[in-house]
Length: 105
Image (tube, rainbow, N blue to C red; front, side):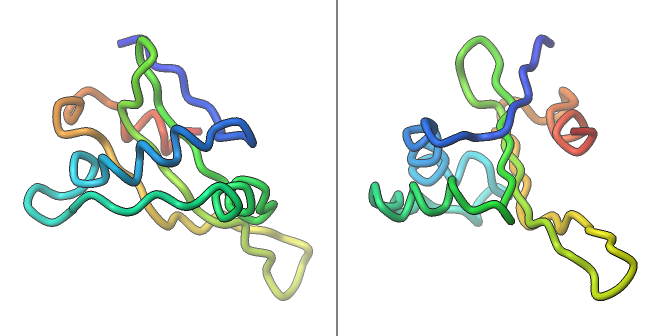
């Protein structure tokens, strides 16, 4: 397995749209469904949000998995935590370590 894990950037609106359209493939079988992608303006705001981090795991130019969450500043000690919000791996890529690779990021 040759995965490339990377953080989504401002030029990744199409990947964000793909994740919405193909949401069911990343969800628990029978639970997900295709979602309406964000419009251009909303996608830009999402990708520019400094509190949000969204990674994708790519293999040979296709998205095998993704994970997103928020940087949460704590009320004391100057410490921040990462609050995992969502992780998904394509059905065909499960059991190959994609999710583990994302979490290790």
